[in-house]
Length: 175
Image 1 (cartoon, rainbow, N blue to C red):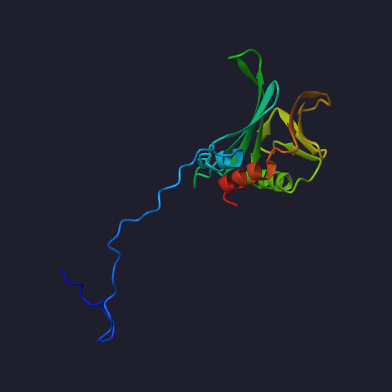
Image 2: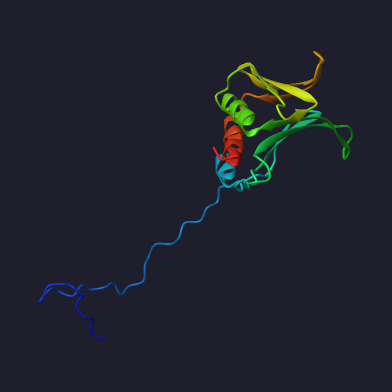
């Protein structure tokens, strides 16, 4: 079977020969397991508006953005403080609801690691949350409204990616 000239080639151009031999190279086989960095990159993407939990030893802060529903309600962000009493038993000990404006201010400060930051519920809430970065850890202290004592603390090491958490929540707010 004769090959045809390449379309668009000038008249009289040679027709290239194609290899008729089988390739001799063998596909390489991976024997080493993927590194930890490779596994991190394979993590499933976060679904928009999915809550983000920041777990501690006995308490978890769960951030959730409620998107704007035109002509019904504005966007807002809630933070639930949940205590883990036993293995499968948990109890909500506090709530903080912020307007979109208040949440944007708080999350921007959080992303930029300003410290300390105090978040109060400008729409509703039973607690206020104080964030502090000490250089070696992130600390979220939860205070009852009108009371100076600390109800609980959620501590995370300095490796915790607080900027990405803030970026995801800001994206949910539409920023």
